[in-house]
Amino acid sequence: AFSEEAGRHFGAMLSHHSHLLDVDLKWNSLRAKGGAAIAEALKSNSVLNKLDLGWNGLGDEGAKAVAEMLTANTALTHLDLSHNRVNLQGAIDLASGIKSNVALLNVELNFNPMGVKGMEHDTSGLQHIVDALRENHNLESVGLSNVQSGGSYKRGAAARFDPKNPDGHYVLDLSQPWDHFLAETLYERMVNETGESWINHSLDAKQLELPQDSSTAWEMPGKGVLEFDYVTWKRGLEAVFQLDLSNPCDLFLGEQILSRTAEADTSRECLRECKLNGLPFEAGDELPAKGKLHLVYCSTQPQDELVFSVSLDLSRPDDKVMALRLWERALTAASDSWKSAKLDGAAVTLTTWQYPEVPAAGTFELDYSVALATKPTDRGLYFSAPMAAARFKQLHEVLSCEALSDFDKVNLIKHTAASNYLTSQQVKQLIESVSYRKGKLEVAVFLHSRTVDQANFGLVLQALPSEADRQAVLEQTQAEKGRRRRRE
Image (cartoon, rainbow, N blue to C red; front, side, top):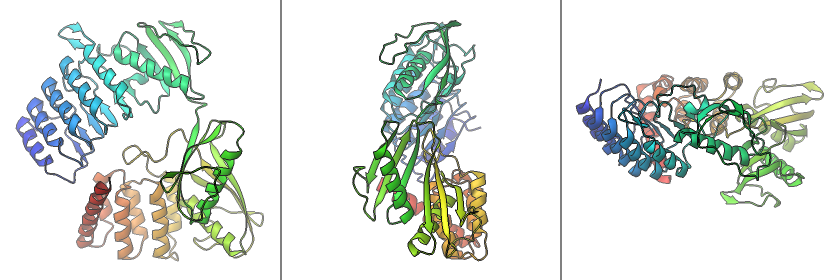
């Protein structure tokens, strides 16, 4: 196990390191001085995203150093300080750091006796943490279980709280600051979000009556055990579109979505965002023949997909190109599929034809589907799920065709990377599907930033033919990281 002295050396290394993205140092003996050395180094580190210091006995002194680091660091998004003997004063200091930090998305403070002073209950430290959470609107998930009284009762979904994904069963002690904060947050959300509700709600095991009218204020009790289920079964669903208007398929989708929302006679269908080349775009205007269109479509109707009906005459060159683009998008886009497709009345699927050869004639009738979701598919490298196994298998089947050129393979893989994240094993298979060395290197480089388990990228490099190629990919990926940081 790393000691305090090791922590000082590790801190010295981090202060000059520009490559590490994720550091896991849990279950060591860094103590206050070792943790402080690491925290001091991270004040100037602009690369590290994830830091796990759980089970290191940092105490209040170490927590204070971490808090000071949080006021200066702008790169860290995930921080775990669970099981670190952080007490009342450490909680107050951490609250100050959390309040001022704009980068943190996830913080874990579980199993720290913040709500206890000596043998007495003292929730003032927790209250500081809660006040900081009220002001920091960037946090996506918070862990604060077993910090106030040993967690002697079942806390349900309160043990770990993701404010963007609140569904679950809650048992909250309203006399405790953290639980009261959760209840306030969830009630405010339930009132303001269409279709979300509390059900089976009770206070001290007795049925609790809530206002039926959302405009009627409800004063939440200051004590008692509040129990309820939070459900979002009527919650509005959304789909995010990044469309290249020079692509006839993307232009078609953009026109269809703008038309659909413009004609909607209720507020149950709308565009939350509509931008052309990064600037606001009026939905009623005609779309140009080129440009980048960003749309966020939202619906609170009882539907979980958007369906667009298309009829194409494949003897016409423009319709044939359109069919090919719809085929490519359904193969590679995370939320898109062919719900039903027929050529001259006969059913076809995404793998009936040999990509990219579209039949030269016939009437192609297609119901093109885009799945709606409760949250965006792309939530960044650490929060997004990799490409679903069934969809990847379908794509890999197409790429495995020996007659398919490397040019077409790389093109499909680029389309895939634009809207999907992948595991290192999936990336390795995609590289192996490409025949020539140049294509393999190109695929390895641009898929690196879309690999969810980058610690296993060494597995990917095994698909390259030589050590020189592996080194070349590593150098290019580091150079690309540098370019991205400069752009940011």
